[in-house]
Length: 102
Image 1 (cartoon, helix red, strand yellow):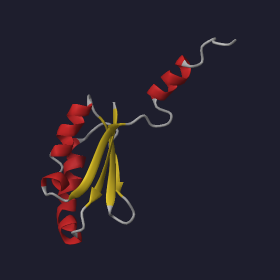
Image 2 (image 1 turned 135 degrees about the vertical axis):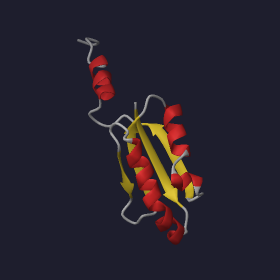
Image 3 (image 1 turned 180 degrees about the vertical axis):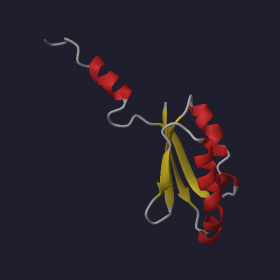
Image 4 (image 1 turned 90 degrees about the horizontal axis):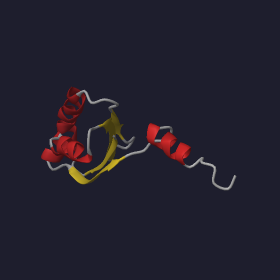
C-alpha cells in the first residue's frame, strides 16, 4: 500500500537544521520501495511517500523518524494514499465501467 506522511515543523530553525541530516539518512537508509520525500520550499513542512505492508508498519517507521524523536514536529498526518494512475485507481475505474444503464 502507498503511504503519504505529511508533517509540519515547529519553529526552531537551528534545531531543525541540526537534526535534518539524521532525518534524511534515516529515511534513505530504510531503502523503502517507492520512497520519495523532501521539504516544502519554505522548509516549514515535508512530505514522504513510500510503500508499506500496512498502516501500522508505516506508523512504526514514522515513530523512529529523528524529527519525531527530537520533538520537532507541530503536527503530522500519515494516510494510505491512492495516487492518480495507481493500480487501485485503475481497479476502481474498471469496476465502475460495468454494463449498468447500457
